[in-house]
Each structure stands twice: as structure tokens, then as C-alpha cells.
Image (cartoon, rainbow over all chains, first blue to last red; front, side, top):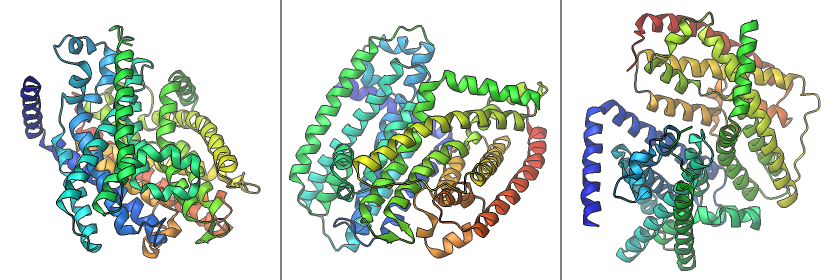
Length: 262
Length: 267
């Protein structure tokens, strides 16, 4: 563990050096990630401007969900996207070999090899959004709720990371589908809205989207003081299953790697 | 013209070769509007309407949006940025082809392939909404089938023109990711990707009417729903035509200026 922390420290320092060298890229990443957050915000605001309340959720409460959506999405991008995005190309060029020879777990290495520091700015915007919404609702956050929400947030990040690993693993089976990397982010779009909003469309849809919408609705309900214990337990179980499935899929998929490229 | 027909055919064959990749693109485009269709299906109760849209209209709005977007949308700016950054433009300059027309025909081939795949997902979603969720959706295209392909083709040209123009900024700016993201989001919102434009604040939709963006997807979709009267569709065709001319005129000038800056060494 200490060895990994030492390695990760050097990864962060190297990423920082790269950002200092390519300042234009750094600023560009900040603007792009803020733009995408604006899109998420606009989608929820536009829907709620036409409906004062949807299955018990008003716009201020929904903005707390958007805040968590922004935080989770950008944390996954910041800590894992830089490395995982390269996997398709490494397989295609047969360059994954050099990585497999390193004395570190391959999934851990590809996941953590680069940190995109610019994407750590946007979660601050997400936090501000949550803070503003809670202030408008006159809701005061307790320390217990904060700790509880942070636990839910970390589980959500782990769930989303596992979802990305799940899709990235398909690159071992089909060459030239590097665009599959964008798919989990589109799935995450379902969680821009509170889970209960989908309730009115019927059980098949609600149950299909249930795991995806848990990741933002659970922390949002916790900070809003809405009882969420059963949902929190669902989040723990879903994350655990998703992590195991994605881990297993990565390991099985890795066996298909021939190092011949494509 | 014959050489561009070969470009079209070759690009279509290439699109067929990368079926899995194309399918992933279709899935990427399908998900977000489908979630929005679910939300509106849940929010508007049976028998109710919202700004003249019934529950089924709103669902069909997003399904048609997905279908038409697969044909109209190009995102050529990213490819062009790559061509300029890596000096790949030189390859085209040495060939007896026009860069603009070459990629337009190539884009049209991919668009035809994408729309064929999207028809599959569109049919699946229609079945899901009709049978599983009990929302009776009926396509009322009678009388519109002749005009719709023309409008969509014009939308494709306008979107390609806008995208090409954005791509031309690569001759001056190397790091364009932020610009493309912001521009893409602007187009997505103002072409009705988040909500139909009638559901937006009044001032915003009135302002957008004279830009090309609502006419790329929002108007064709609304026209297919039978919610646009003939004079308005005529106005939309004229606005699109105007913008296509503007884009093509500006592109000629900017392309010439860009080539003067182009060094062909890559970065």
C-alpha cells in the first residue's frame, strides 16, 4: 500500500508538470468540463421550469442531484479517464505488453497512470450548487449527514469507475471501438435526474435505471434529510456486484490479449 | 462529380467494415434523449398536454430527434483539427480533390449508414414505448414525406458547414477542445436536444429562430409531428438556405486564409 501511495504521488506530480507545460490544454479542459456541467444544469432547469414538482422533487432538490452528478462524473474523469482512455489504443498497437510486465496490477496501473487535474475544478462547482440549493431550502447539514453523504459519494464513484472498466474491457473483443469509452458517460446521464422522477413511466424502466440513478439520488437524499437507508444498502450491494463483475471481466478479457495489435 | 461518388462509395464500404464502432456511436446518441423521453413520459399524464404536445408527441419528439440527429450531425471539426495538427491536410492538397467536397461526400456516406442503424434502434424504442409502456405512438408523415428529405438534406449541409467552419479555427488555434465542447453544447441546446424549443423561455426561442440551429433538428422533428404549419416550414427552409450560403461563402475565404498560414510540418 505504501509503495502504491509513493507511486501515485509521482503520478500526480508528473500530471501537474504536464499541466504546467501545456497550460492551454489545462485551461481548455477546465472550460470544456464547465461547459458540460452547464449542459447538465440546463437540462434539469429546463425540465423543471415546465413542472413545479415531479414525484415530490422540486427544482432546488433536483439541483442537489445535479451537484452530485457533476462531482461524481468529474472525479472519475480526473482520477481514471486519462489512463483508461488509452487502453483501446494500447491494445490496437500491441503496446499493452510493456504495461503487463510491470510489477503492479494491470487494472490498477491503467486506471491510475494519469490524473487530469483540470477536472478537479468542476467538483467545486458541484459543491457550490449543492450549497446554494440547500441554502434556498433552508436546510442545515449535520456532521452525521455529511459523513454519510461522503460515504455514499465514494461508493457512487466506485460504481461508476467499475462501469467504465466494464465497457473498456470490450476493447479486447472488438478492435476499433475506442468510442465505447464514451458509453458509460452517456449511461450516467440518467442520473442527472432524481430516481423518483422515472417512477411514473412504469416498473420496467424504473427497475432498469434503478442502479444508475442510485448513485446520485442516495447522496442527495442524505443531504436533504430524506430517509435513504434502504437505498443506501442497495447502493452498497449494487456497487459491490458491479465492482466484482467488472474486475472479473477485465481479468477474463486480458487473457484474450495477443499483443499482436490490430 | 464522378470522383466524389467514388469517395461516397468507398466511405460507405468503410462504414460497413466498422460495424461495431458505428453501433457504439448510435448507442451513444440514443441514450440521453431516451432518458429525456422517459422523464417527459413520466411527467405528462395520459390525456394531458404541454404547450400543444401530447404525451405521445413528446416521446416521439425525442425518438425522431435521435433518428434525425444520426443523419444530420457531423462533428467534422475534431477530424479537421487532427488533420491540421498532424499536417495531414498536405495529403489532400496533393490530390486532385477538393478537401471540402471530399469530406462532405464521405460524411454523407457515414450519415446514410448511421441512419440505417438508427432506424433499427428507433424501431426498438417504438416497440418499447408502444407495447411495454403503453404509450400509443403513431407516425403521421403523410403529406410530409416529400418535403422532409429535402429539409433534412439542407440541415445536413448547414451542420457540416458550421462544423467545417469551426474546424477551420485549427489553422489559428491548436488547442480547440474547449471551443468545440462549448460550440457543440450550444448547438445541442438550441437545436432542441434538451427540450422542444417551445418549452424554453420565450425570448430565447424567439432569438434562436433566425440562427441556423433550431432548423437543424427541432423544426424537422416538429414538422414530422404535424405541429408546424406550411408557412413556418417555408421560413425554415429559407433560413437554412441563407445560412448554407453564408457558411459556404465564409468557408471559402477562411480556408484560403488558413492555407496561407499552414506550414505542413505538424506539431
